[in-house]
Length: 263
Image (cartoon, rainbow, N blue to C red; front, side, top):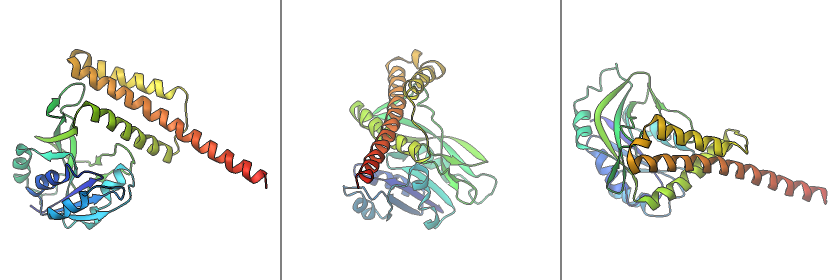
């Protein structure tokens, strides 16, 4: 089909081949955008699988996902993360679409999130609808540096699935919280978000209540509890790291000022 897949990746050697193979089931072209910090053989594996590889220092979530769109040979874009796969029902559903018609801007999928081979369905982890197929002239990723999404006016929700191999295991879950909370703090800092002594706790409590009560995690066993607690921890750490970035900036500024005064 006349669809270009765009996959962003950084140190995704264990995932990239499977992601490309998944996209090639329905795409005429696959472009892999590799963050310049990649230190493994992600780029070589992607090229070996027939994907076009472009390198781009990380711009933030939305800008990075949008970077390769002007290079695409198709107007329809399938935007996948390296740890996402089209399931069989998604391939079948896409093959039946009439993409030439102009009455739809994007298609949303139901995403199954996994820890290892365990499908987490609790506290909003399913159906976790995400727009992954969109027309680039009528829709696109918002320029957010963290937690971006496709903005499209006319979206059809397909009753089919993406598999999202989010975490290898629970240790990897904690590692990802560390990495993503750092990214989120950086994104907030870049857009001018100020420090706060109360924000870490308030946002953590809000996240905990949302997942436990409003998303029903309290009634969904260990999975519900785990999602609620890890979401709260993520929220707490990203605001703590934001405060840390401001302290570092102020400390560096004070060092520069003291050095100038001593001249």
